[in-house]
Structures are given as structure tokens and as C-alpha cells.
Length: 278
Image (cartoon, rainbow, N blue to C red; front, side, top):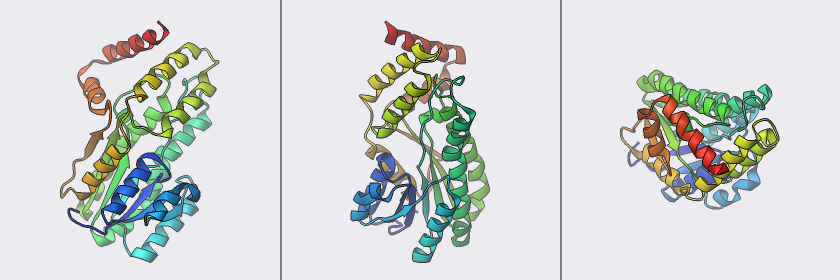
């Protein structure tokens, strides 16, 4: 899709952070952008810059069908789907309800997949398209207190690999973005929910250490603009990479996970956690 300006792009989770910054950057570059999120009022900024906004919840079938139908009616095509919507459910495995665990997968994997299913027939018809799935460095590494979040992102990585093989004959590319630590409201919400879930349980000391460690790390986070620029690169590359890692800690942590044995990686985290209590 190199130099293919005015392409039609659908971005979920456009109400803040990476989704909003990607929408703004692509609008500046001349793309036709449809921003989707649960609340329309949170997307007034990108609407004022020229984005079309859609009320869409990736766990609501009706809103996704209506959103895709509207884009096709108005533009006749969808060139890029940026599956960005998601959240992080954190808490000790013993403390997190299975209902909450299922909701984590509904948002981070199943909702994403359903929207992809709705878009694919149109991309196949036009014999071109690019599906960009926003994973995380958490899709390749692991931490305590985040089992269900990491599980959903590890699943998304495998899902994306399989999808890439299936749709390649139709001229459709599948790309995975692996953000590191990014400035956003995501972290604050995640830590608040973690404390509610495990802050007074048998895992309260680990929760306290994890919160402290995370706050120190996020003080040096990258701007979400870094991810927006990475998505633009993935869209415009003639032959995109299958994965793009970007943002603070992403490349370093994933490299460490690749070369360090499990027990040593575990030990590194336990040591980091103990330092918080020291």
C-alpha cells in the first residue's frame, strides 16, 4: 500500500491513546479515517480533524455490523483495519473471576476476531487489504498478576500468524504491533483494578510491589505517537514486516525473554519485586 493515500482506515479504540494518535496522524497524511469507540463524545477531537466516528463496542455484534456496513456504503471499501481496542485485566489468578477472564478474551481476542470476519469479505473482493492487530510486548513475555491479559495477547499472536497464512493468497497482509510501555490512561486503570482485585488478598504484598514497580517504569514511557508512526509505517510498506516492536522496553524485554531460560526470567522478576519492598 505504499504511496496509497486516501486509503480507508478503520481504527478501534480511537477515543484515547494509541488509537487516537494513529487517527490524527493518518488524517494529516490524507487517509480517510473511521474512528470507532464505545463513546462518541470521547472522539470529538479526531472528528474535528476530519475523522468519521462510529459508536462501536467490540463485544456488541450489532454495533460492529452497522459500523462496517456504513463504511462500505459511504466508501465502497476498507483498506486497513487497525484492531486497537483492548484493556488489561490484572490480578492474581486465584482472585480474578472466570467471568472477568472471559470478558478479557471477549475484548482482546474474540471481539477483534469478529470484526475481522466482518471486514475480510470486502478485502477479499478488492484483492487487497491490511489487518493490523495491536498486541503488546506482553504477547511475548509474562509478568505476575497479569495472567489473563498476557494469555489474551499470547493468543492474539498465534491467531495473527494463522490468519496471515490464510489471507495471503487474497492480497491481504496481517501485521502485529508490539508496544512497550506507552503513556496512556490504560496503566492507571489497570493498576486501580489490580488493587481492587488483589490489594487485600493473600497476594497483597505482591500487588503492592507490582504497583510500585509499574509506576516507576511508566515514568519513562514512550508517547503513543511512537505507535502511530509505527502503524503508518506498517500501512505504507510495500511488503510489511509481520511484527513491529516499538516503545520503551519492548525490544529489550522481548530479546531478554528470547535468550534467558524460564527460571532465570522468573528470578529476574522476583528480584525486581523484592527491591520494591526493600
